Length: 239
Image 1 (tube, rainbow, N blue to C red):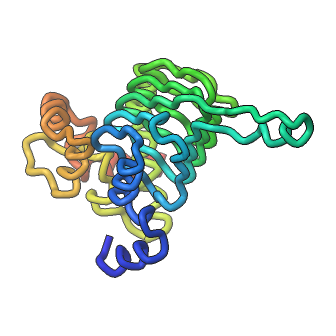
Image 2 (spheres, rainbow, N blue to C red):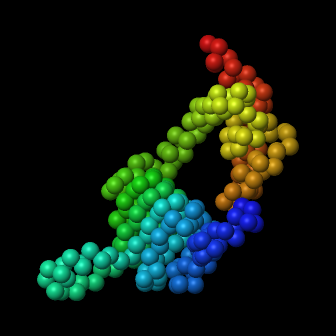
Image 3 (cartoon, rainbow, N blue to C red):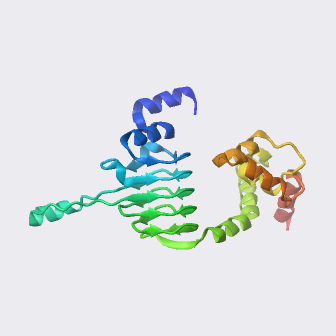
């Protein structure tokens, strides 16, 4: 993000201008926040600070655009109007470690989310979500284990990389440079070659460079270099 853009965001969105400034604001308000919590498009995110001690967010949590996290409700306003009674509405929200919350998800009071959890976009969460699982839907429901999702994503790497390259060529009239494939480099990058900087930055994500690099070096690519991968795509197109 360039300097001028940062200034404009700061003027327009103030404490929601960046992930870092929103993190500090929530921390100062009294919400419990772990390390490496990231807010994507924080100016679109709503985290309830009415009773900040009721929200706890762990380490390595990714909160994406349009997410709302609520620890109280005001639906009782209808009951007050009809019956005159004032009824409180509050519940703790606890989010574990290594969690991804998809765009436009709403997390309601009384929710507990375990560790290593993926929540799909547009979900409505109002119950306990166990660790090591993928959930999605309105209301949210269990989709699969994190292990099964890992296998699924592994199996889709070649298919999605091929689609990415073919669409790039369709739009630009030529094959993309290998750097454009970023996180797909695992399938064609030779392990005995120097990694381009863009690939090193991918390995550095989640502060996990050493583990990712060690695993990368212990595996073999599906293709012997990027040129072989492109040749494979050309052959598929000619079939």
